[in-house]
Image (cartoon, rainbow, N blue to C red; front, side, top):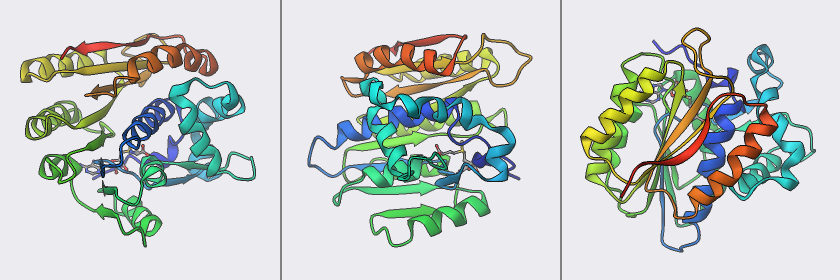
Length: 279
Ligand SMILES: C[S@@+](CC[C@H](N)C(=O)[O-])C[C@H]1O[C@@H](n2cnc3c(N)ncnc32)[C@H](O)[C@@H]1O
């Protein structure tokens, strides 16, 4: 039984990091005319009303995207494309709609690109299916995205961005997603895999790193943005991304963007970027 609903969290500090990096990587991929494949293994509903009772209940977007948009003109390169996209979903200038990862991907896809979005929650899957209806190059799957990740590799396009964004409702999700990404990477070592993790209990992040090393994964960059220092007592204090095969432009863009992001969001925990696993 899935209880997590992204509508409560859309546009929070974790989303701005994840979506900023996704948009940067998708933009980089669009520099080549060759078709690209986009896979979102945990897609969510796709579009979020920030004036809904869910978003208002937590108000998380107020400490995330709402703090960044007023400064979009001075934003670092990493976030510029993403912030422009969020603006395009709010054409009257008032922040009331937040695009989830499938909306961002759809908005960046070209005629020759293709996408598959997996979502298991029936309500969110229905929203996503409605949202993408008529998009010829997009398919929504109401099935397990972790199995889907392995099944979809290697894609016919031979260029892929795979976003893996589980909700980690179940503790075994940490090991499951680590195994799935490494298996997918073994089937398609050239793909770009962006894989989100929460910082709730640091030992779980360490366990993922150990498993990645043991599986022989290489060329993995890591970015992390924590709003507060690590503590086992307070729930999620921050989040991070493992990025397998990042564009060569990402490390410079990431190190320039993170201090800006931390300052605008008032982050006081670990804020880091660097290579976790070398080539
Ligand atoms: C963090 S949310 C996704 C947010 C979305 N990626 C975004 O950035 O806008 C995680 C989603 O995964 C869905 N989910 C959980 N387990 C899943 C699975 N095994 N396969 C596909 N979707 C799953 C949940 O219902 C939830 O909507």
